[in-house]
Image (tube, rainbow, N blue to C red):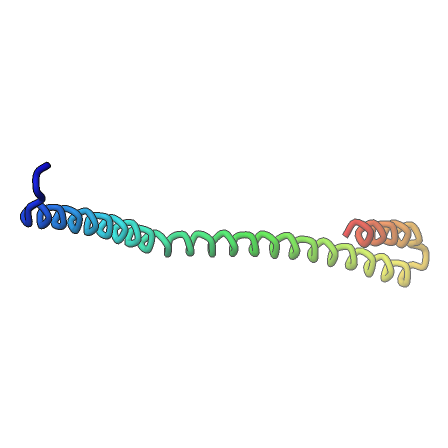
Length: 105
């Protein structure tokens, strides 16, 4: 067998250090790319959350508007009954509408 010389050991260590440096460099590049993309991911997540909240609020507001319409129709039927004294059919339909609204709610 050939004897290992000091130059061979030095060459081996230089190659080993170069490979280690390459691994560290690749790791830092990957880390930097992930950090660049992180704000976009956070912003996208926040936007989706806000979109869901807006959609829920819009549905809730539409439901409240429908409830207000039902209540207004009932009040108008009561007023009509008080004025005319004979709007019982309007009162019955308003009662049915309010009952259905409250049950389906």
